[in-house]
Amino acid sequence: MGRISAVSGFCFAAAVLSQAIAAQSASTTQTFASTPIPVVGVQAGIDVKTGQRPARQNINNLYARGGPQWDLYILALSELQAVNETDALSYFAIAGIHGLPHSAWNGVEQVSGAPKNTGYCPHNELIFSTWHRAYVVLFEQTLVSHALRIASQYPSSSSPAYQAAAQTLRQPYWDWASQPRLPTAAMVANVTVNGPGGMVTLRNPLYSYRFQRQSAESGFGGPLAELQETVRCPETQGLGHNVTASDEQMDSVAEDLINDVYDVFTRTQTFEDMAFDRWQGSSFENPHNIVHNHAGCGGTIGNIDWSAFDPIFMLHHCNVDRLTAMWQAIHYKHPMFTTTGRSTGQYATPEGSLITADSPLKPFYGNNSRFHTSNTVSNIRELGYTYPEINDWSTTPEQLAIYIRAQVNMLYGSNSGMDSVASRSHHQGKNYRPATLSQPQSRYYTAEIQMNRSEIPLPSTINLVISGSIVGRMSMLSMPSNGLASVSLPLRDVIVGNQSLHNMDTVTAISFLQQKMTIDIRMNDGATVSVETTSSLQLEVQDMNYVAQLNNTGFPSFGNATRWPVRVQPSMRP
Ligand SMILES: *[C@@H]1O[C@H](CO)[C@@H](O)[C@H](O)[C@H]1NC(C)=O
Ligand SMILES: *[C@@H]1O[C@H](CO)[C@@H](O)[C@H](O)[C@H]1NC(C)=O
Ligand SMILES: *[C@@H]1O[C@H](CO)[C@@H](O)[C@H](O)[C@H]1NC(C)=O
Ligand SMILES: *[C@@H]1O[C@H](CO)[C@@H](O)[C@H](O)[C@H]1NC(C)=O
Ligand SMILES: *[C@@H]1O[C@H](CO)[C@@H](O)[C@H](O)[C@H]1NC(C)=O
Ligand SMILES: *[C@@H]1O[C@H](CO)[C@@H](O)[C@H](O)[C@H]1NC(C)=O
Ligand SMILES: *[C@@H]1O[C@H](CO)[C@@H](O)[C@H](O)[C@H]1NC(C)=O
Ligand SMILES: *[C@@H]1O[C@H](CO)[C@@H](O)[C@H](O)[C@H]1NC(C)=O
Image (cartoon, rainbow, N blue to C red; front, side, top):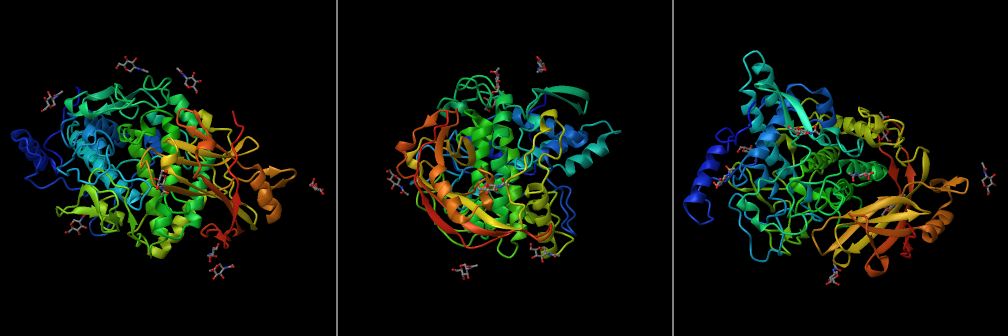
């Protein structure tokens, strides 16, 4: 097939969009006369009677299977990346909502009181996961609008199969907790797929996004501004692309990711705890940060201002959304936060704003010209997709919760066989067994870290080190640049003499941790940060009773925790 042309006129929002573009070029005012672009999810492929919806798929499965859905995913993403960057529904403009170029999208203007130099994305606060849910939905509905149009161009012999595949296509996810290696689909430079005109080899749109260099990019700054395309683990800042290094970095944090995810599923009881990393408790935001910092290691996805331009961003955030949706289905009686917090501010939210579950998720409108809120995106049923683990149309909420707990145990629990796809040779022969405990009764240890973000160069990762081995990690992204960051990290078991930490008596174990646990802080390029400069860094360990689950649908239970102070000592790690 020929070069894929810029989209127009197919998406349900396209009429609105072309009016908007016409209005923008006709006058210099930024005001939006017409209806804003709604974020409602893909409407195709849904059984409106039962509520059955197509599942977002694991990228490794989608890639391994190939066929019409894989073809359409790649062709649609490639076409989306080719849309003129001045278009509000271009890849560039959608990626630009998150951080740079810090400009208005869809007519949603900057507000006074907003912090300087930010995009719309909230991190380290209550609406972290709900905002990103709406964001992935916007990307998905745009992507699928391309796939539907491409599917209609196939010759009549294959058109029905491609149209059916397009209807049920959704944004795929990268389950980095069970499959930490960079997806193969994102590592190859070129891909060959079956297009409407036959087999065609394309630059792989998952490998990188190549900037078109339109005037819209003039607002860009910083060390990544000279890039021709997005990069992972550049050899020297801003140059080249080393996906092998990125893949190895991900492998090195494999245990943290699976342990942290299982810990969040089993130990957090409120949405507030589960979702974000400012308040104390373990949350999905920390493993999410670890992925940004390590898949990027100095490249695009490790920098909040640029991260959304890397095509693996949506695979990554789709997985954060999946973990959140699974957690919500387990905690179906209390699926949304009910407390309030203060925002550190974004492009369209003044610093210090009171945030509730009814606060607007700017710049995302629902279908009634009102902004989405955490409450309006709370239930994925309303947004046109589901996940393989979530079948909420033919079971009761309680049956679904039981089923999902079993899935969580299978994927992330102590008996999980990590990386079940095993489609790549380097997956074999490595035992990723997490440190969750197999003994029926034991002690469980966590590290509580708290840090004033303004006192540390960001992005960076705080490693907890015992005798040269990392036993837990806290990653922080570049924004917000101030406020508290907190995590509660499950500590990996370590062998002490002929015993394991989790089997020692508590007094001995705590005293061991207090003496031996050290801190190593790294920037994304591997440079060390002096522990002495971080006076606000607080470290404690907690111990609590642990009772293993009785069966594969139960979760372990945890007793009340006791906290112990730990003096912050620098690690001697090279
Ligand atoms: C769209 O509107 C309908 C009816 O007004 C409502 O039931 C549905 O939840 C809305 N969808 C979204 C995503 O806001
Ligand atoms: C993109 O759109 C802008 C503004 O309409 C136009 O000036 C530019 O030539 C277009 N670029 C391409 C590659 O079509
Ligand atoms: C990808 O395809 C382009 C031409 O389309 C070719 O120049 C390049 O060598 C290919 N790269 C790889 C890694 O095969
Ligand atoms: C890419 O990274 C790997 C692993 O760190 C390293 O061995 C290799 O030399 C790098 N490749 C290039 C071209 O620099
Ligand atoms: C963090 O440190 C900065 C600079 O020392 C200070 O202004 C700010 O109040 C501190 N923030 C918190 C939450 O302690
Ligand atoms: C472990 O060490 C203790 C004390 O050092 C010793 O009494 C015990 O026999 C050892 N156990 C094994 C299995 O070696
Ligand atoms: C499975 O174990 C959990 C606790 O781990 C328990 O609450 C639940 O009742 C058990 N279910 C069955 C069917 O035995
Ligand atoms: C844990 O703490 C709560 C509240 O302080 C208390 O009600 C409960 O009995 C404690 N549980 C155990 C096992 O000590």
